[in-house]
Length: 361
Image (cartoon, rainbow, N blue to C red):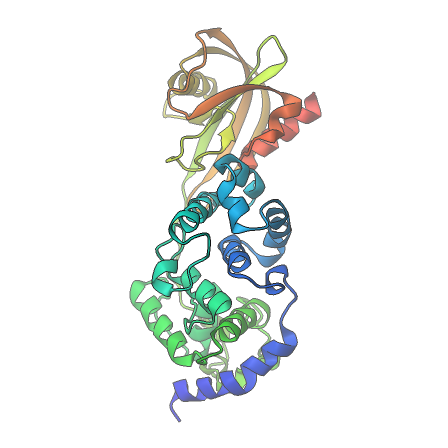
């Protein structure tokens, strides 16, 4: 029998029954609505279930409906997202909520073509929302599903390539159980998350083990095939905690179009060749806020990793020698007492600086 037919039969006869018994309890699986599905799917991009769960509870408490999300300011939304990372997700869902309010009378669109037009929604998220919220026959392709399919078919091409993703999407589409798209998608993802693990897969507990070509090879962890990742660059960044005579510190808001747009930060930037970290900080604050500063004592070094680079963030106290702050290369700025800093949204790196300030206060 053709491998696709074997797997399709096993999906219907073994995987779906396995999922109905073994699926994990998750808050977004209860009281399922298009809004809750949408928020959870955006949160689960680049984020593990255990990390996303407390954020989901907090977010839904503050924004229990699409209407409440659309009516909020972007800053409020970013504050609720604070610490979850990949902040473009939060900005996009806020934009999308306002589009749904204005263009769809406040109701999440149920048409696949309309879903994918919304900001922040690509083919995977559209398929997840379409299948889980509206039972549209759309198959998802995320990292877990790619791993499961690669092993089931012993697919030996680099799964990061466009050709491979098209092939694997085609396989997922063929295996999809019509009329049960939501269950199929969740079952495939659940299998990858709990059984068909990247390392040490539990083949003995897998409902699809009998038809898995990867298992037949004896080394299922050889799949999926991936080309080596390029080494990510490492940068050195300087930042200043500028103080005044009132016990306040200066924070700046990143421009909307920049990385981490809309978030607040202790102003600074990347060290350039040939300059000391103190010179870097002084230059950056002049460029960003139009002030000349005196860099003082060291506060803290923060190490942080993003998806495309890692950084060491060196933070120093500073005072203004001349000039008044103005938003030159930032969106806004504020002077705040240390006890009031947390009212604004920050990245994880800047939150660590606040931790240090609070410990020193």
